Length: 222
Picture 1 (cartoon, helix red, strand yellow):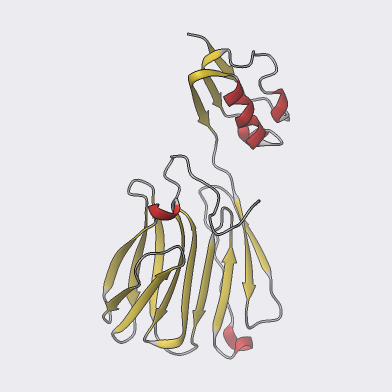
Picture 2 (cartoon, rainbow, N blue to C red):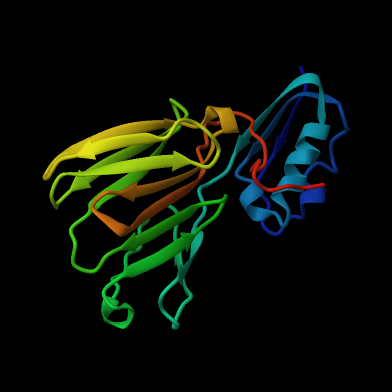
């Protein structure tokens, strides 16, 4: 068995990663701690695959990277705002709704199709939802809480699936998992509530499971 081991090299171009090895000449290629240092990681992966014989194995290992978030507002004129956070860390901010008549309407855009919209009335207590990607189950796991009176929440996924309505009592916590495998683990869920017509939550993105997937099917490419 032949194996190729690409070591980290600061400033390396993706095309130069495997210049020293033959194409289709290796049973196993280890590419560990490399892709985060090259100009074009996608080209680096293509070159790694090209070094494999038919049926060969490729092992990739890359350190976590930071992310940038772009925040817009539908009812304020001083947007947008940008935020950058390091891998493994969090970032937080507060919003003054004095300039939008008490109504919050913010949309957060992040990497890999990540979108979160938060629209809430100024003084009415409404249900809240948090979302987590379940890599093991391949689902979008939602947790609802409610500081106000009992209200229903309705979920609609733009990628398909039945409309779902849940009741969230005051002080209660309700969980629900959204199946997203039919759309290659892409999702675009809008949540509305009986508590207020001004209430909207939008959750969009891709659940990474470690398996091969496809580009967002809602984006047409030719």
